Length: 173
Image 1: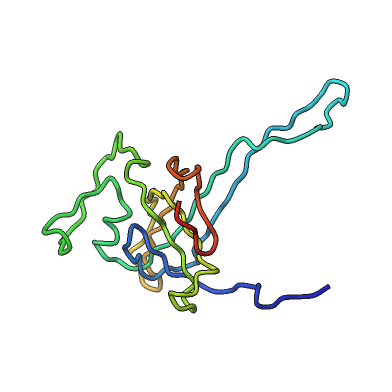
Image 2: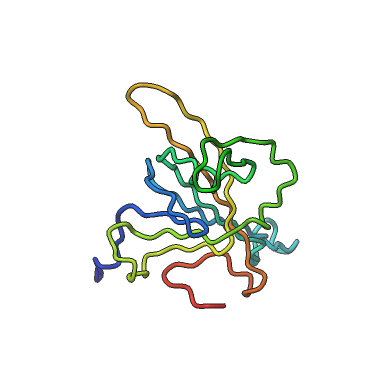
């Protein structure tokens, strides 16, 4: 067996959502791709599946944001509004968010290995239509940073063959 060590990837990434650098993370950024399927069974074969059919693909990205920056928090909280002038907010007001269509606000989410130059995209991960779902639990305490975990749900791009995400440099639709 031949081992190609260049194909073994390690390390952290920088996260950009809708063109905004989300800053430092703590605990690692986690990508999940979940494929669901339906097992076709025939009476003649009992409970033995005779084939499988893919019924869907879910893609999500968990980003544990470390930086307490109001502009960045606003970018990942669809149910929030900034208090003060745009870009110079003095606060973020969290609202109920009832009936916000996340697909309507979905934007590109890009993960790029921190150690690589921007021009090296072979290890990038891009979600074409991602929407943030913030679920924060944090403490004001000694000996621990406040981490703001945001999970991005990724949706198919109906205008581009229902693509959801891509590894490397995606081609234009």
